[in-house]
Length: 124
Image (tube, rainbow, N blue to C red; front, side, top):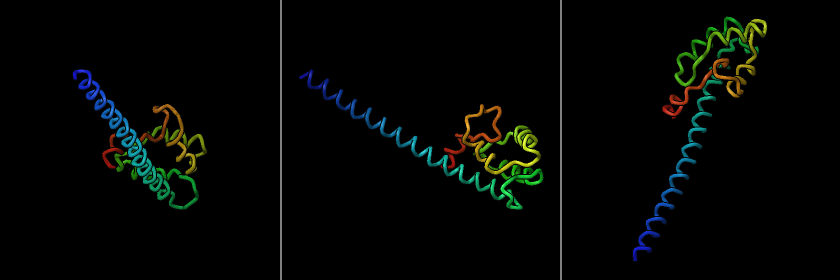
């Protein structure tokens, strides 16, 4: 009888562990969806800041972009890195280069944009 009780408890523990593991997979997938939504909103801000629709951000437009992004708690903007990147590209920066900054593996201290995971999760 004792052996049966132990195996029953172990079976419940294994089932519980499987549910916890499955729950974590679902939570991780939901986080990725919410992160995708945040990135889509941020990309929209970048595109809206291109006032002359030239597919690049000029020195005048970058000020608008920074102001718009600073109101979004889901992203941090490193203004120094943004200015350095713009200087390196001759005073303007292509929208595609800005968007790539979200997806590359550059160390955080060199990035223009950093997503704030806690804010992204809260917003979802």
